[in-house]
Image 1 (cartoon, one colour):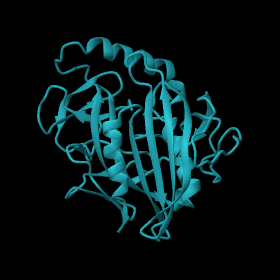
Image 2 (cartoon, one colour):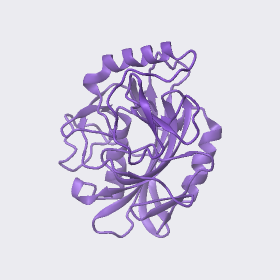
Image 3 (tube, one colour):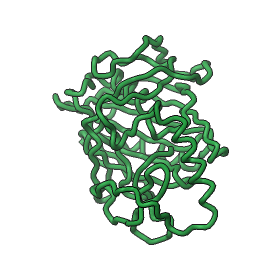
Length: 293
């Protein structure tokens, strides 16, 4: 995924993170990206040979799609972004889609080609994040074993609370992630299935996927985590990025679990680059470790 946010310092300073605002790197660094404020643009980039064309290409892409994307980790109320018209429409008023797609839940891969989407509004009062402790991702009543060797923190979503995540850089500005979060019932997340479809629609069309061209659902089915009902949705999210022609998009897993709380649901979100079987296997192991607690 490609998005503004804190990344491991590309200058090679161990344990430090530098902010990428979508066009340039911050001049300062932090050791705690989960709680660091977004720095003002400085125009200063750390010296690293061969990055100029990448930054210029990303800037061009952002200018072309800025009217259609929403900054997820710092999302503003009322912002909207394109989603695949083949996905299911969320049933709560907070999501307010501008058209009515045909629901297509399936336990097998969809045969429809990825297509251009309509607009969807997403809750934006979340975005909070914590740094995982003790090798465990824990939020919203869910727990998962953190993927060894991946960076702690550096990821949040505007509609999710108390996110704990691990990330792994793939290319400059593109990374893989595994995370757990809480979804607030007050935001309209009322059931595992409806919430999984809503989260996938918003995530697929967010600024994490600048250059979004469409989505194809691979699986959508009920799951049980420690006896608690849940829903798993797995999709390919496609992008067209001139700066990263080797990237077709991401495989994204969204799992929502009713953990028994009257106020929230548990959320697991992961992504890894399409075709990256090594990181995919690590994500599958993380999913297999999910438990309620």
